[in-house]
Image 1: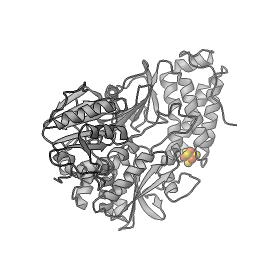
Image 2 (image 1 turned 120 degrees about the vertical axis):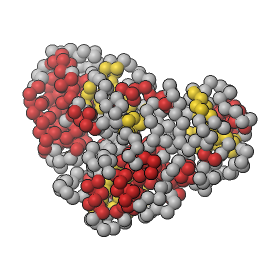
Image 3 (image 1 turned 45 degrees about the vertical axis):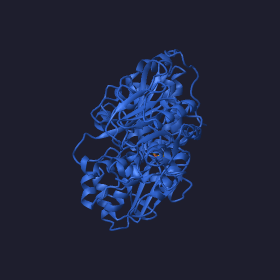
Image 4 (image 1 turned 60 degrees about the vertical axis):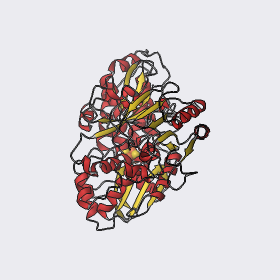
Length: 530
Ligand code: SF4
C-alpha cells in the first residue's frame, strides 16, 4: 500500500473540499491539510492529524459532513460549523474520536479503512458503497487513496473482457443503455487500435425556466467526477487497454465546473494512462447528453443534432469508431475488473432522489433492492403523492415498490436513468406533464418530425384539457408515434411522462377537463410555443 494514502494515517479529519473555512478551523485545532496529488501544503508527520479535503458523500442534507478517524473508529458530524471542527481536530490530536459535540454516528472498523465505513441507521448507511466506496473518503486529486482501495488494477485484456461480461450500460447518455456492453466492446476491438473511448458524464438536464428549483435532474455522473474521478478514469483506462484506444475523452456539461476541474486534475495525476485523458465540455442542455449529440459537441459542432443509428455499427468521433459509455458504466466496469468482484456480487445501481425533498441524495442500491429504499436517504418536504422515475422524461408512479433492475423498471413503464423525482401532495400531475411536454417542444434538436411536431402537438393537446377537451385517444395515438418513430431516445422518452400519468392518474385528467384541479395547485394552462 502506498504510504501517502489516508489509510496509513493515525488520525484523519475529512472535510468537504469546497470549504476553506473548515480547513482553517481544522488547522486551528492542530491538524495539517494534505490534499495529496503533489499539492500538499505541508505533509503531516506520522503522529500528526491529517486534514483531508474530500469529495461529496452524495447525501446533501448532511453537508458539510465532517468525519474524524482514529484507531478503529470514525465519528461522523453532520452540518458541522468551524467552531465544532476546531474542537474535533483538537480531540483527534488527543487520539480520541466522538467525544466532543454530538456525532451523527460512530462507526467501528478495522484500522485504516480504505473505503467509506457504513454508518447504519443514518442516510450514510443506505444501500451499498461499492462504486461509491471512495465518495466522501478519498481526496479527489490523490491517486494513493484510490490505490489503497484496490484501484489501478493491473488488468489484462482478458480481465477487462471478463469484467465487461454481463455489464449493462447505465443512463440515456450511454450508447448501450440497458444493454450488454460486450458487443460494442468487440466492435471497438475490431478497429485495431483506431477506436476512441468517450466517457459521457454530461448528464445535465436543466434549462432555465423548465426545471423549477433545478433539483429535478440526475447528477450521478457529474457527482462521480467530483468525488471519485479516479474510479471513472480507471474504467475508461481499462477500456482503452482493451481496444488499444488512440483517444480517451471525458465529456462534461459546462455547468458542472467542479466536476470539470476535478477530473482534469485527476487526469493529470493518473499513473501511466494508456493515453492522456482529454476533458471536453458541452452545452448545459438536456439533449446534449444523447450519445451522438455528445459526439457532435466533442467535435466542436455548435448545432447539435442526433445521428441515425446503424445496426451493428459504433458511432464515430472525427471518423473513428467510438465507445460511448457514461461515467457510471465505466466506474462499474472498474469495480468488476478488480479480482475480488468478478462474479462476486449482485449488480448495483446509483439512484439520485430529488424533487420535493429537503435535499437531494445519491445512493447505491443492489439491483434487487426496492426503489423505496432510496427514500431512507432523504427527508420528504411534503407527503408523498407520486414520483417521476427515470430522469427528465421519467415515468409517473404512485409507488416506489419496484426493484432497481432495468427489466423491472421497464416492465412498470418507468425510466432506468437512476433518478427519482419525488412529487408531494400539492403537485398537479397534469401541469407537471404539460411542463415536461413543453420542455421537449422547446429543446428537441428539430431533426425528426415525430419528436419536433409531436412534442408541440402534445403540449397543445394537454393545454386543451384545461378548456374541457380531453382527447384521451388522440393523445395516446400521438404518444405511440413519438415513442415508435423518433430518431433518438429524446423523443422516445419525451412521450413517457404523459403516457404513464394518463395510465396511473387518469382521474386527475378527467377532473381538469371538468374544471377542477384535485391538487388545488393550478388552473393556468402551460404556455405553448408559437
Ligand atoms: S427525437 Fe427529438 S432530439 Fe432526437 S433527433 Fe428527433 S427531434 Fe432531435
